[in-house]
Amino acid sequence: MSASRASARLSLPRASLRETFAFLSGVVLPLLGKGVILRRPPAVALAQRLNLDKRALRIVQRLRDRHGPGPLLLPVPLHPYALILSAEHAARILAASPTPFTPASDEKRAALNHFEPHGVLISGERERALRRPFNEAVLETPNPLHHLAPRFLAVVEEEAPALAKEAEAAGKLDWDSFAMAWWRMARRVMFGDEARDDHALTDMLSRLRADANWAFLFPRRRRLRRRFDERLGVHLVRAEPGSIAEVMARMPARPGTDPLHQVPQWLFALDGPARATFRTLALLGTHPAQRARAMEEIASGGPELPYLRACLLDTLRLWPTTPVILRQATEDVDWEDRTIARGTGIIIYAPFLHRDAERLPQADRFAPDPWLEGTPERAGLVPFSDGPARCPGRHLSLMLSSAMLAALLRRGFVPKGLEGIGPDRPLPATLSAYGLRFSPG
Ligand code: HEM
Image (cartoon, rainbow, N blue to C red; front, side):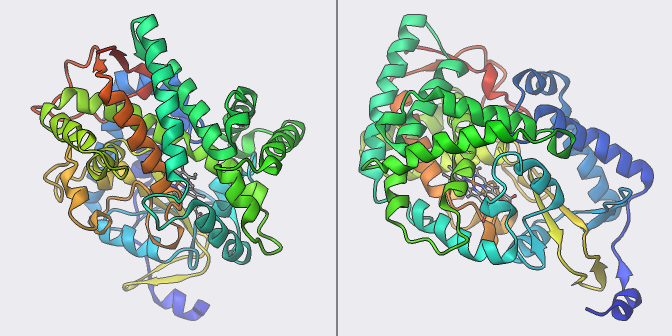
């Protein structure tokens, strides 16, 4: 749109400097402290103890109460942001990706450049047009069950008993042992059995992700990234039958797709479902009615496990593993009678939309059922984002998580020390997956 037209229109309603500071210190700072790309468990524990996520929610609720449904301009010097405050606006922004609202925002590029500069998420429009279809084809985005599901589910069924045995010997199941088993499973799914014990690969990625938490404040470690890429390449070239690497090897890729450099995002993204699985195990251990339905579903067989998937989705609603979805305006955009200026960062703060008691009767309760009843994204529930850049790995992720969850539920693990959590009181704004413990059933 022309500059003269833009100047004739109003800019967005604006937060005061004081409100902007409150948002930066009360919402953004705790997110950065906990680690955006790689979580820091002690910082998450501190946030839980100090109730920082609840305070962050209140800050955003107050902004909505004062300014209405927004979008609300936060006048951050040099880089203004528009804060999305309604479910309908979130849906409109996400539907308009990658133009005029690109997912490749400045902050995301600064962070993800540390380990996946050619990943689809931070690609420009031309490269995205090649890379997004490749991601969808390999991950089989529309399919609830990937065509390799029988193999992947068998891998879960092999790793879960090993984990259970270890937990029985130790007298407890904790995050460290769960994560170890999860990554063994994840590497087998991605690259095949040869990669099962390649902890070094996952560790290298963790070090790069730790740097990415600092975005442009930390120099890029080119040597470490080269070593990581080489190791990844070895696993991919093997193209082990029954793995994602095999699917990739068979998939035609047009020049510019850069298949290898799509994989770090997949590995990185497999962290989220691990935390969601562990938290859902805790919720089902403290919510007897939902647990009974889950056990019924598991007993009746079938690989799809829709109720367990709904449980996982509701865990992701309550504690989204991607709490902030960022976009950036690529041009001046007409927005009702206002203009969102080119370059404005767009912040969709999922915990606010997911726990909005004004719209959602289930705001602070564990409520899997709405996920079985249609398209909750319309009501602003966006754990996997929405629109053309919506997570292409959501079904693969839910399939692996629900299978692991079923395997652990069958073995009767019981949460320890979660007396404050249950159906008769509001669920807390933070639930650190790292602090959860279960005793063998
Ligand atoms: C708990 C599990 C997961 C959650 C909650 C999740 C959530 C998300 C969200 C919210 C986005 C959009 C980010 C943004 O717009 O800034 C996204 C993008 C993406 N996710 Fe996931 N994800 C999960 C697991 C996975 C898995 C397992 C894979 C692959 C194996 C995957 C692959 C991707 C890719 C490639 C993108 C970029 C899509 C694009 O830019 O077009 N995700 N995910």
